[in-house]
Image (cartoon, rainbow, N blue to C red; front, side, top):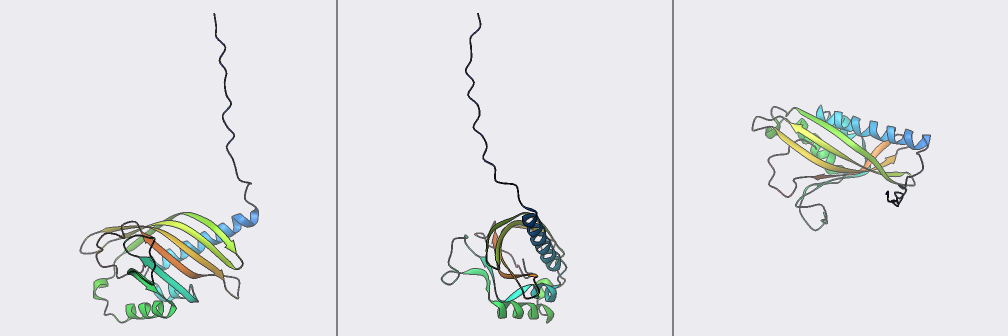
Amino acid sequence: MSTMETVTPAPAIATAAPPSLDDLLLHHEISQFIYREARLQDNHEYDAWESLWTDDGVYWIPANGEDIDPEQQMSIIYDNRSRIALRVRQFHTGKRYSQTPRSPLRRVVSNVEILRREGDEITVTCNALVFEAHAREDTLWGSRNEYRLRRDASGGLRMAAKTVVLTNNAKALFSMAFLI
């Protein structure tokens, strides 16, 4: 004697509409921008890296968590555009002894995702893993990066803001004399 089983169909998985060609092209353009930024940093090409910023750019690496107010609490880096330029000039002085010789660096960037588009600004997030080879020891720096990108007058992308949330930002850090 057989029993009849009632099979309940699995709920349908909600899927978003497929991306448009414009969405795919924008994602590709943004990914290429982020990969170029990573290459410039890895190769210590800081003048070219600096040129990727808007005039009102803000570069922030929070300390001791990610839900902090950089105006009220300590940050690893919280630079406006003029401080970014000063930091790059400091690299050129030859007096950054913690980076003599310069650390070989390599980044792996993944999970590039467009979060929102508002006017000429695009908010993007990605994950990054930076390998630093240094005399003191090799170090891995994991992070979630958030960018606010803006189109310039020529139509290209530039960074209006970059936030790097280090996975281990609540721990004591060795020197981070390069730009992450």
